[in-house]
Length: 193
Image (cartoon, rainbow, N blue to C red):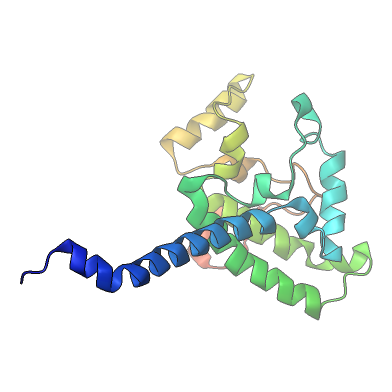
């Protein structure tokens, strides 16, 4: 075998250094790109997203306790542990919405509202699959007042319930609520009775 480390590094050091620099550049581009694509300004670069952005600013979530959430705070999981979810969300949901933005005319709210139930369902299903991780980022240990609310929150420990199962239509214009468990089981949107 012979030779040792020094001759190997002399012979391959440039390639190793180039590979390490390339890897670091790729990681920086991936994290920087994800951060850039998660801004409210980027989301609103599509005209149709101006409608939900206005609704957010009028909701009880905006300005509450000095917090002014943006699109990513609810729709993109944050943190290193959820980075794979954020990337998947941009790749799958972002690409789909970009195609639909180019294909559809959202020049007025009525045209946007015609597609709103589908978009709301897709967002709700993401939250269900993510165990409402974006809700839990701010609402760490909810202690609701009242026996009914406490009993409902107990379902999060005893059943596979998550925040979005009960808390739909909090921020954006109201849309018929979705039965998320039935929707998962049937692979299609099932509206609550």
